[in-house]
Amino acid sequence: MFTGHFSAATCQQIPTTTTACSGTCYVTETRGPFALFPGFTTSATGINDNWWLYTGGFGSVFPYDSLLYGQFNSAFVSGGAWDQPPCSSSAVPGTASPNYGYACVPAYDSISRTMEFSPCATASGDPSPGQTRTTVTFGNCSSPVALSAQSAGYQTEDMYGKLELWIPIYGPSEQFGYLAKWNTVINSQGLSVPNFFTWLNAHSAGLNSVTQAFAAPTKSLNPYASSTVFDFQTIGVIYDSLGSLNPAQNGQYFDYLASGHSTPCNTNLSIPCDLAHLGYTPPAGTVATVRFSLRPDIFWQSDSVGSAHPARPMTSWDVAFSYITLKATGSFQGGVLSPMIDVHVLDKANFDINLNAIGPFTLLSITAPTIFPGRYWSSTCSGTTWDSDVNAGSVPTSCMAVTNGMSTITFDPLSSAPNNGVATGILIGSSAYECQSAGGIVGGGGCSSTGVQNPPGGGAYTMTRFGCSRVTGNCNAPGANPTSTYFRSAGTLALAIWAGTNGDANHDSVIVGSAAFCFNKAVGTAGCTQWQRGIGNPGTGTPVNVAQVSAVIRFSQDGNFISPFNWLPGIPAACCPFTSNPPVGIQSATPVLFEGTATLNPCSIDSVNGYDC
Image 1 (cartoon, rainbow, N blue to C red):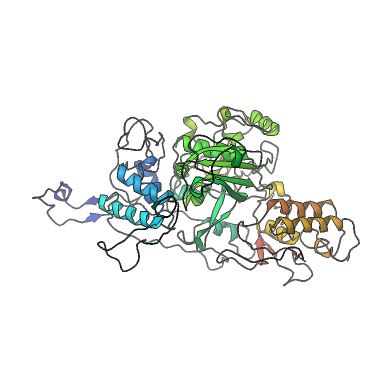
Image 2 (image 1 turned 180 degrees about the horizontal axis):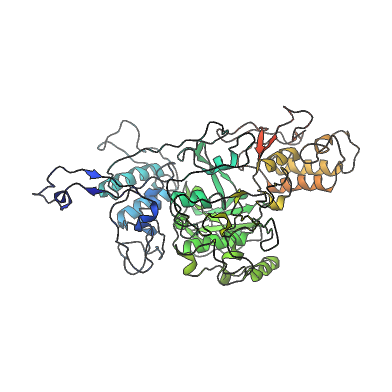
């Protein structure tokens, strides 16, 4: 945090048309932790104005700074009768609202919303290099007629500067470093080294741990109250999101928790949102719907000792709970859900997000919030009730709620157990790392050096890789135990390549049929050797049994590993030629992989023990 003050009292006077600031005026600098800045904690009953200056950063940089809409549009204030108007009537009260500075300008709200939800990204007549402020031109989408996102983005930036919604004082640079012994560190576009894919991929020979140093303590691990970069870098390795952006090219989206998505209705494209297109009548005001399918191999983190937190699959109701409550509480990360009207659950793995607006960037934003388990967080339904409802195929809307206390910065998920009734702590996710105690229990204070969230300088969080036991130090074999291993671990990727599927439904049905044909066939049978050895059937050669066929079926149900891109070619099938279309910057389809201290070589390097031999 930067807490600046001017060098002389005369510099603080308000200038007029005849009297300017006088004296030698410069700004001094004092650095401190984020937690000292009171502005991030907004009031749910009025305007918090007990702060002065703060140096902020930027958000996602593609294609415009995401804060232009996601922070300065007044839909993201902690809203109520005390600020409406001029603030947006769609704002809800919250204690971690993004627009803590209360930028409430209706004209700016309008143009920034047009930028975010324009029906087209670009159009003929958009601003171009060489134009000046007097010659600049703007382009309209053809149908419906509206400013393109590029033209509206230009006007948004122009109005932002004219209004001085933030006044730049100085521009420091940030540098990140890591030890030379670390390999496959990801230098992400817009985020640099400290990004999720670094913690997923970085490795060093012989080491089973990685240390990350923060410049300041976290402020809150509560997903409803998290707001700082340190908060999200911590909970971001515990919770996953529906989608992700290619770290090498932020404009490329791919499904992450989802195995795929579609848009069954979009009125901008003259596809009505009605019973005929959706199979149900959507809420009033729905102009578009995005339909998602969850991968079937996603499980919530579980205890390595005991059964207080057993392995349970993620379901559509967990997504619905997370999204509905994040928006309703005015959470910092829930701001991107402003166009969401409802989450309509179709079944355990399929659901729709109904929207009142859609634009070129909507998919990138609405898939960003973290997903957490409703059975631990619901304030109105116990864990037992939640499980019973899931098993019955319907979790009622009455379960989609949290208490006011749970949505505040003072609620500590490490030391609170409002619903599970067995063990303290509900910081339980589905991602690459667990908050696991030395006794093997997930979700509680055992991963914090102080036993609670936000240990001070000198303190630490100790995270354990999903698939390992902190009690014994042992980890699942790469690719083994899908219910207690991260679904995007290196071993899981190796197993997916071994299975031979590629996400094409016709191709994968052929591959599943071939695997079934190979059941119990003699070692060496033509067309069966792929599954008679390798990571899915370790050894020099063993007949295919239920485990191998099940693995092939599992990945055929998962769909494309990084949908919508074609990256893994799978086993060639005459019916379905493979057309490669990988995301920018990704390795070849059979890379050398690392999981813990294990090195997983492809068959092209190790023809005897390769994971895909």
